[in-house]
Image 1: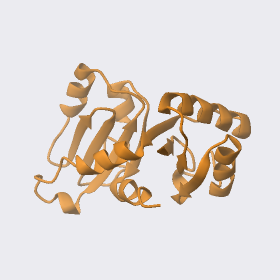
Image 2: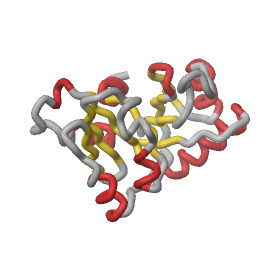
Image 3: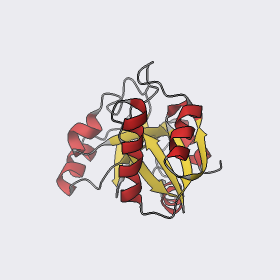
Length: 175
């Protein structure tokens, strides 16, 4: 099965730098097949017959051993990635084509009360929508000025989240 691994907090603002060649080698040394990386933000596509939860623990252990620090990893299968794109929720929002769209990959499904609290901050400039273990984010301002950029998601949802923009989400599926 094809999996997509999204590493949280690597190669951001010059911190916890991992070269993609090194990241690919770590995944290959961990026993995964057909390993590919995508852009310099900690995205890896690979193949494995194992189940996602066992894979996540194996990957995180391999990264900690190789890098000397912990890295949270969020996994999605090929089918899950296709569903994320298919379920795009903002097509009826006026001007959505000009907005910044992000996907927050969550490590688990948040509690309904936490989802309701996060979605209650929605306004014309910024919208959040949680579907299962994924967060869709539409923003009319810069990421740094957005609530997403201020790390509101993990505080409100009480889950681990790593974010990729819509273009990355679409393009990584084609590598």
